[in-house]
Length: 278
Image 1 (cartoon, rainbow, N blue to C red):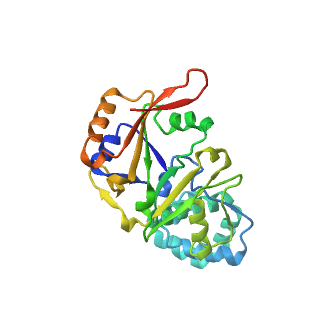
Image 2 (cartoon, helix red, strand yellow):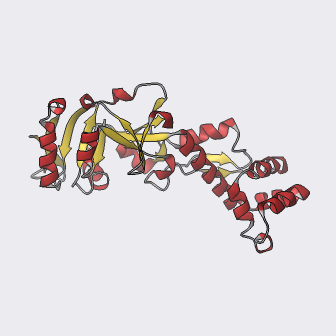
Image 3 (cartoon, helix red, strand yellow):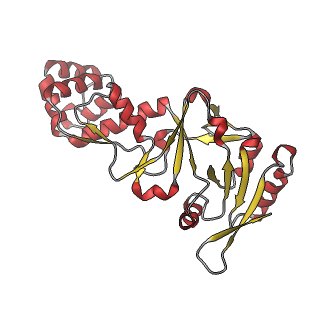
């Protein structure tokens, strides 16, 4: 499987680590983006209302209304218990607010439970090859690394083939964020993308945060990988000669001598790339 890198590939090889992402940090704005459908019954609205009393954002939202802006959390809490139907009605009338609540809850739950590591198939279609280099390979100035991902086959890591769909994952409007089905829909959204991305042929690894390490100085989570997991590195057409030389120097080290290096070159007649063994 493959991943694209920028100039930081030297650091990746030096430290033998892959940065992992929180679900809320994915680059596509439709990634992990939930929507909702249906109506909220009074009973469902009441359950949601009482659940939201534990959410600090709920009080901030209430205070956006002029008549509540001066009230403390305790005062709002008392008002809700004194007149729950009024607040339930507000939920029923503001679908956009409900949708935002689901999205915020999904990000909070997803970021707490999961880190993501994404790869594409090594068998990238020729028509998609240039596109992949353009928006993941830093406009062809980066590098593409072929991995054997078997080192990720362990407890706490789930491999999921991305499903490319026309419609987004939708949550029933009356569902509580504490419902077990809500958690399942959140997980499904982590490996569902729009059908226009199908050429990526992506696989995602859902990783328990407990298996990740944290770089405090750079503020990111990562997972180590063994040197033997790298099989091949492709060098972009516009890759920096300096970084390329550093990379080839690293490739001469004993633990990396098994890696094959290829240089990408333009085809002489077609809008396509060829790869030349260095």
